[in-house]
Length: 292
View: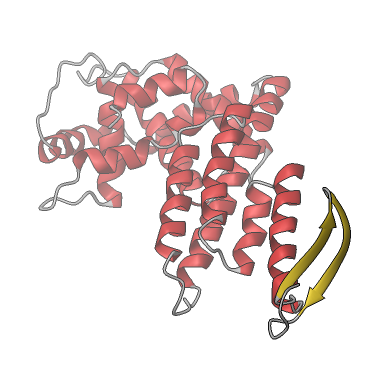
């Protein structure tokens, strides 16, 4: 499991998709069977972890780059990614407020060994998060976001869009496959679902659609294709990972061969009459006739 510092480092290294997984990472870090982590708990836990692990102005400015990308392409981040962006935006503003105050949080002077202790500490400190301070922090952040170089935004968009689009398509495929009515002989549906979810998990760790990533996706899709997918599933698979020309040719030959043997009546036997090693004639005979 990644630590909060790992996610913060991802932000500093411009690995924005990894950074957007941080809210879910916080939930997993602080959730136990007896103490689930609610949506109300998530924000103060994020703020505490960010401050405790060295939040600085450069973190906010780097996050402003991601925010500018989202503003340029509003549909780029959807679902859980959009929720993460909104949550992290609120966390960044609160961290900016705390950064300008003598509160002990940003200097690592306050330690807490449990979620309960962290939430108690943050409740004691939250009086500083008044409208005036948050508005000032928001104004600074918006200024940074609006001054991000357009070429930088365009480059990040072009890197993120393909990998994010594949994630959305896979998630839609998983959802549709999950609710589709299974046939009695579809014993491999669980296998296909597991492979698709593993592929999503793999993509969640990628930042860019490189040839290595494309090859890895192709392996997952090849395994799913070999697990008797339904016709509607093939539409998704061909979008996610189109077959190569060789694969298409092989698939066509296999399907054609199956149809051929299903539709054409094959003679019972073939007799070959030959002299020396040269074939002179080929005769189709019935099983009831003896072969000469």
